[in-house]
Image (cartoon, rainbow, N blue to C red):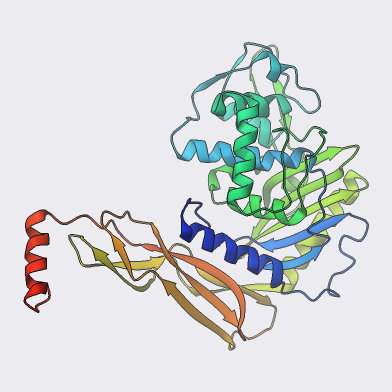
Length: 393
């Protein structure tokens, strides 16, 4: 389910419904796969497009996320790129504070210049704390202002058990999230497909050809060792133990897994691989209606045209256990009756909900197919006159 975050009533409805699906409608029975992450503190598996839950264990337990914090840092960075606030080729100057970060780092020096593109590599591949702080300061002015944006974004995503105190995941009091919340943040991040060009790389270089050339090796080893994995982020501190949020795509189905509190790096990778195996081996992805398909017409007030088509923003799909028939699947369109011109193509106007025996399984946004341009005054006057005389224009 692609969720476009807009500060509107409709956005609130969408996120509320998404949370309802995630909270209450897991496909898997609790007994199925119960030993997949037996020795981890928490785990969660979600199909990325529909938001359907395939597995859960202590998914709402507040835990320190370590460097999985950087999933939110990456999300705000990708949004800034999409909005034109920053560009990949623009240079970022490393502050003294950024250069002083310990833990995982790309060894920035105070005053060193790197592009946004290079810093993204440093964050996504090497989990650089210095790169994260440098990016945060560049986008928001200070890390503190960026952290405020992180927490505002968490609220916008309707996350009830998440609070950030830094951009890196270094140990801090009152810095926590849950496996479920991390999956939702990851789902939002994956709307920005370009991020996979970074998280899906196993190795790369910074300062290539210079004396201080730095070899980047992805901290997420599954990128190399599990077919289909192309993200997202590892995490480790003594307090948090070994964590991994991963994503993989096979046969049009993208899965997000979150694993928190494993005892060793080996267990972290093994448990995550088992979660992915479980998702892909036991579930099928069914497309019920394709992206762009018309779901109805929306009336346009004060528009050049009186109606505009409402279409699916993404494929309307559902995930079912392998071998299970889709005969009991039903669909319900919830759509605005009118919009007021001017309105833009891809503005949110409703949802298509997919049910199985009255149980909400997934939900897909409906958007305007094209711009709804405002009518000129002569056209509006003529239309009003026709209506007053009982005619329709």
